[in-house]
Image (tube, rainbow, N blue to C red; front, side):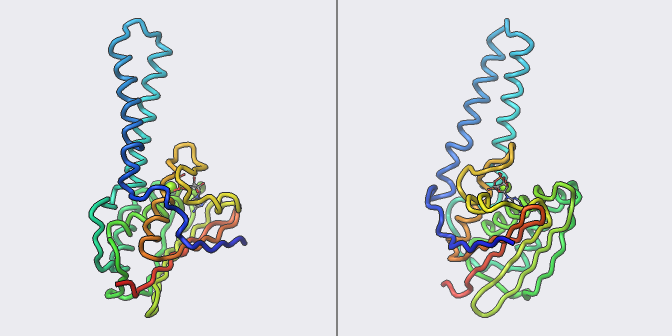
Length: 230
Ligand code: ADP
Ligand code: MG
């Protein structure tokens, strides 16, 4: 059982989530535009070339879609609002958002929420939903044969703990170490941005991320968020 404690001060590569958008979305758009332009103007394109250019354009569209999902679906880039994040509420919301995907992938999600309706931490609720959705999405994708994901939440007067545990493929030490690096992905269709966004947001809340993972057995990600940040 491998375990690593992260002080989530890891990444200052992209200082604002929004700063990356230009590159992440404009590059694929430029490529899509280029492909469409060629397809429109070159009448003598071979069938193979046409096929190739259409496929590139389609892949790039999927890429943009992924980037938006990992990066900005829920997290409004500006302004960074500081509000009460009701733990039960954001867990419910994330669960609702991810449910169609988990159902499709034959993954059951079990919630054991010991926090009360009034339990909260401070930060941007929409960003916190983005954190939970990105982690849950990875857990579902790691559950290649279906499986179970457990979400636990608990709180004392100093900290809130949220654990997301899957019984998926797990990660070796190298992957755990690189998790959260921008563009680090082991998934051919991945963006490698999901965990970077998670680290950035948890860091901004002065929280920690602990990752326990065993190849072949599964992964547990524990978020620890202080409650006393004003
Ligand atoms: P992406 O999902 O786009 O690949 P992420 O930053 O979300 O990017 O994750 C990076 C990589 O970390 C994934 O490609 C995957 O290999 C690995 N990973 C993340 N979470 C898990 C998990 N729960 N189980 C197994 N592997 C994981
Ligand atoms: Mg991901």
